[in-house]
Length: 125
Image 1: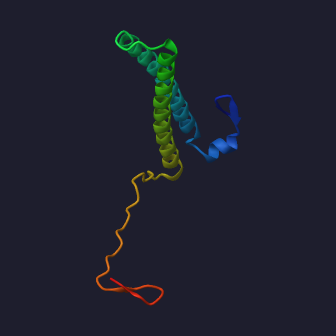
Image 2: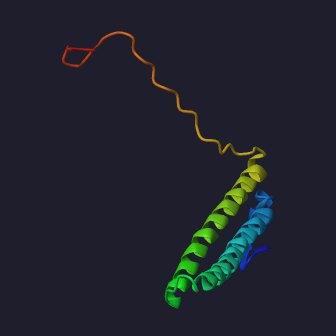
Image 3: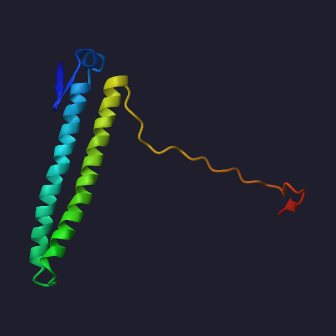
């Protein structure tokens, strides 16, 4: 049995997916980075707003709300970015190929040079 967090995975499944342990370790780091980003971000934003509160006085509840919301967005972004890297690692470990994350190329429609007919038989200019 292979342990992944609190869950035990059969040896057959672990043997079928040799990169499982690396992937789960990567995911664990991604979630811890997101949690750390939230904690450090909330503390830093709260401290910055406490200094700014001398010039722009507003209630403490707004200071907390802004700090928590902004650090939540930052935490989400960091966790999403790191999780995407873990997904790429999983694909690499399973297939041996690096996934292509570049946006697909969109071809330009051809420009017509002459008059066109509509479905009613009219000529368009």
